[in-house]
Length: 184
Ligand SMILES: NC(=O)c1ccc[n+]([C@@H]2O[C@H](COP(=O)([O-])OP(=O)(O)OC[C@H]3O[C@@H](n4cnc5c(N)ncnc54)[C@H](OP(=O)(O)O)[C@@H]3O)[C@@H](O)[C@H]2O)c1
Image 1 (cartoon, rainbow, N blue to C red):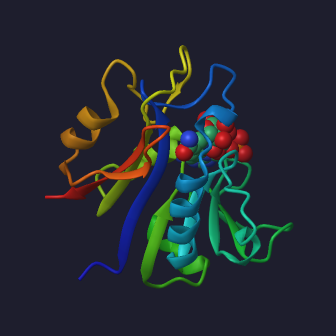
Image 2: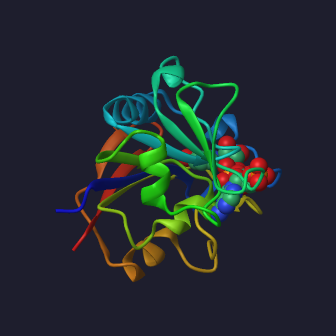
């Protein structure tokens, strides 16, 4: 049995963007039902992994163990500003070494972005939870994976061996759904 269950979480616009043209996640992509879904998933995770600009900023964030990717350290270091966080440069330490450093020898890991970090785990996700706000368009925005919008997020997930499950409606009025993409 693998030591870690790895799940990804993102919300994207109809054209697969996780942020707008200025690399900021706009209010248009923020929905209470998706925030509840995301926050309760993170409360269940043993470890959260994200790039330096993709922290989730929830009321429970300080309690959650996390790895923050940055090139400002050679391999692994304590985060001086958060005792529950470690700084990780994958050039200097493997994912397993980073999890060990964070004192999480096994368990569930939530990957929450940004695009380069999502891409690092494309061959390792057990499930990728793709939330889609199907009425929101972010022209010229930042795709959820490198290669979006030339390819759709669905095409990329499928090319990495994931298969879509049944979508769940998160917000019917705003047409927001979440679809689990599971390893076949
Ligand atoms: N809609 C959503 O669900 C969602 C999800 C996630 C993010 N977002 C948004 O998307 C935007 C994405 O931000 P971003 O493109 O700046 O991505 P990001 O991955 O959060 O941050 C990039 C920074 O993370 C570090 N990093 C990333 N990959 C690394 C690697 N392989 N090795 C070492 N360090 C690495 C680097 O930090 P250093 O500069 O310190 O080296 C890099 O400058 C933000 O506005 C965020 O709010 C939206």
